[in-house]
Length: 187
Image: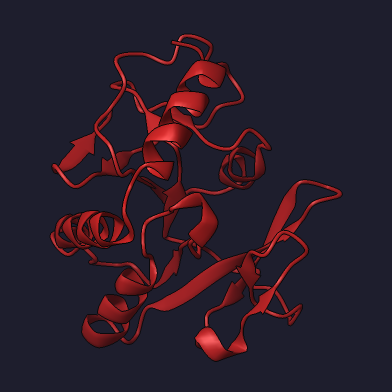
């Protein structure tokens, strides 16, 4: 299927989820995340969930990391919708976030992180067996991921699609994808 078709069906599937189901699925994904090897991981970038888009509860991941790996620096994005680029800022608590013009919580425009990033947790609507992903179509993460050498981990509420037929050379493939069912590894 094409990205547009997958985007439409995945969005509808997400919209049909009850908040309790979303929380349960998020907890199942977190259980798989806790099984990953964090050896050598010093900086993790993760996305903050857009509630109206029924994204997984990433605050569960933040709290787990803070409790089990307090030395790992957690970064969250700030988006520039004119350039479709992101900057990355240290997460300093939910009280220090502000909503942008699209009602997405972000860190204030403090100094961005400019060092290495070891692991990136990537939002997506769907993925396939080859590690291609379907996002919202703006390319924020593809631009970001092209410039770094980090473990690229998708976070998906649903199992993989058979194939994304219109994936291209600009699409950055995942190394892993975490779902409620398990961990999918791509070569």
